[in-house]
Picture 1: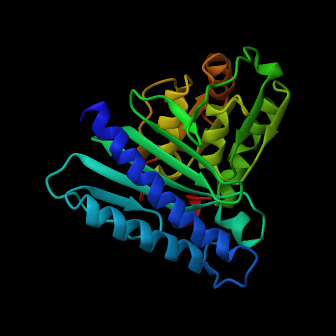
Picture 2: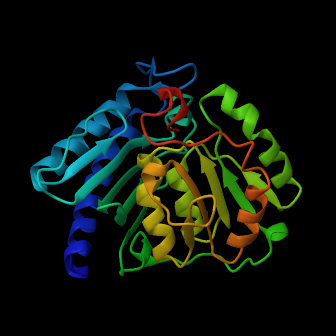
Picture 3: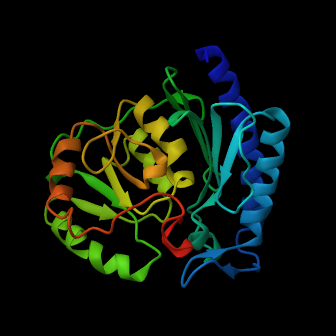
Length: 282
């Protein structure tokens, strides 16, 4: 697909993300219909309303494309190599508690390669967007990753599994990392973590057990902003592998070095569907 075509697709996704974000913004702080997908993993009526809008728009405009969405609104491709990967509300736990840090994430993959990423934070009115070969932007202005080149000077982010046993196994990694960086944050939104790396606000992010809809769109935004995205071994990032290491590129090898020390302690990520539902999502 040409760069011009990808730009037009990104622009369409931006419009959809803004409308879905308006649904979330209008419902923040209101009573919610909360259901649990696992022990501590939840979904609200806002997730479902946002997803319904996104799925309807994408299916109408791109009927041959496949779609994978967190709340089950997906469908298979009709002879196309393209797949939309959608999180209608990344940061549901934050949203349900009234914490205004969440986003709409819409990504497009060609085969297994992410090529378009659009993430909208409705509470800050920040629209992050990128497509392959076109650079990354925040509200239309170009963004770039940070220039921090030492792990000890870096600000990182990670996430906590929704499977409690997995948290126990990941604890040695977190403990080790805390002694090697300036600070670690847990924003509750994988999508925004990646956007913040692209904008130079964070220097790196790692997480295992993550779902494709949490990171597919953001991976494009990071790479187009000049950053690096890989798996835990420094290999090719594929969203279905359910693990990600992202950085400004300058601290990437240092970050991977710490993660490799604990490879045998980390839970195996598997593929989507291998683990209980309460492992995935934020």
